Image (cartoon, rainbow, N blue to C red; front, side):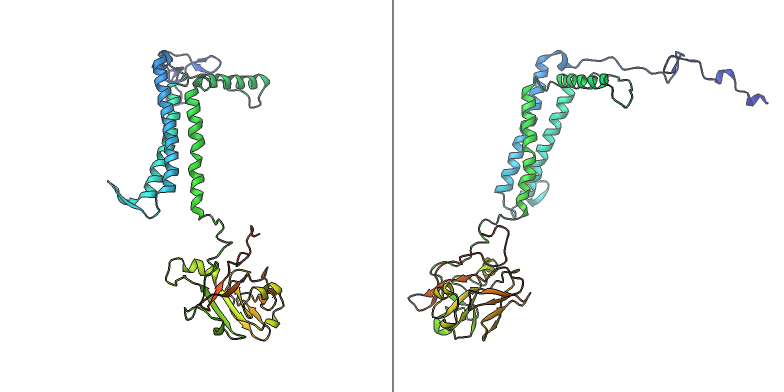
Length: 351
């Protein structure tokens, strides 16, 4: 064996001693230095400084609450299409800027308050804990509970009520920001699905000629479509209103009308039914003069206009609603009220 293969004694590791293999040499660079001596903070020795920190944390949590309230107020009051100039961003959406700013302040204030609380008021003394078996012994469980109690006491959670209560307030209000955003899923339907534009005294307007309908304008066996008086085709609300208020006018021989209410709500055999199919809302438009049946072209739901527009075939769930009509002083057909039930497809809360 050559001299190069024999390690020199000075290159051998020094002897080790101790249970954890600590190196005995004084100049060992890997020797465990241990934890540094704990240096108290100014808040640990001066209660006035601790109170100042407590007020700072409470201020941050309170700021978060106010920012959350401002977020909700901005969401409700600022118009979606409002544009403002803000330097240096330029022209931006007022709503987006307000929501982003207030929600950012709310979240930042909670985080900053928690960090300031931990750094100035909670105990900062480091403790080394020896490793222990994974299976928890009764003594370990007792120690964990004791440590938890010590941690709670050191955090000042029970003693510093101002910090605790303002933190609870901030955490309770911040989720309201997400709850308010659910409003953007769409406007509340209220009772808009149950009512239409029709009311007592509105004349029936021919959708082709845009003139008021008179009884003599409607021949037996004819099919006419009508809309409410005052509804303009170029208005912003036209499509929304006509989707519920579109009428189908048919003139029958009074002796051919089987349903008593249909006869009472008609005028000289002229009956007015909703044009909107009760299946999925398609416009009903195919009329058979001999049978008095109307057919929906989408899914072939068939209604008998001589018997209360009852469903005789197809997937529709209920008859077409009828509009009660009469004649005004000018001799024009008019509505005597709104439909007595919602028009169009069924919906889950329909009464």
